[in-house]
Length: 236
Image 1 (cartoon, rainbow, N blue to C red):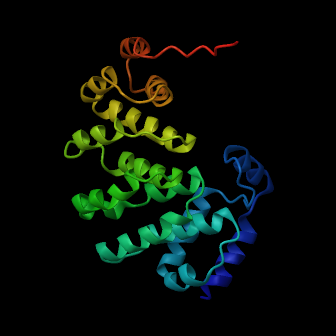
Image 2 (image 1 turned 180 degrees about the horizontal axis):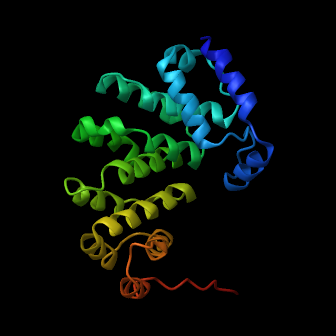
């Protein structure tokens, strides 16, 4: 199978104008969308990973968002040793320029479980990054693979220490905190009660927790009391 021709053919077959418009409405500032559904991309990625994956990763031109997204999916399906996989991830992260590519990529990094301590250390430079999507990558990777009994204390300490001026990084921080609360409510609540997060992240985290079906009505009402009032604009 000529992997490059295969991908182009599949993209031509499965692109949908309606889905393109829908995706574009959810991903601001990205205008190079073909309109291919995620399950279809995953199916293509699995086939590429079993074929000449390296040729695809090295030679396929990234003209559309789905080109980049597919490369991230293919990387996740590779069967390489742990250190080699980290190199693939490191090389891919700079390509991330929107939340959709970031989140799909992070969710697929299931190889992290083979050596979670090493994977956690790998994320540290991204946690400390000032780049919007490097920080989002770190937060989504944390919420996808590290909110468990072995890492929850470290994850909470990190999340509540973060500060960013960027919207999609802050949304990821809030999202990660909400998942922490759903899985470890008591530990997360203590942090929320003493939160030094900026108002946006603090309130957005609480809003996301309240939106969850896995949180009781009583807990939601108590959490609402922790929300900070919106600051009033001052006029002259």
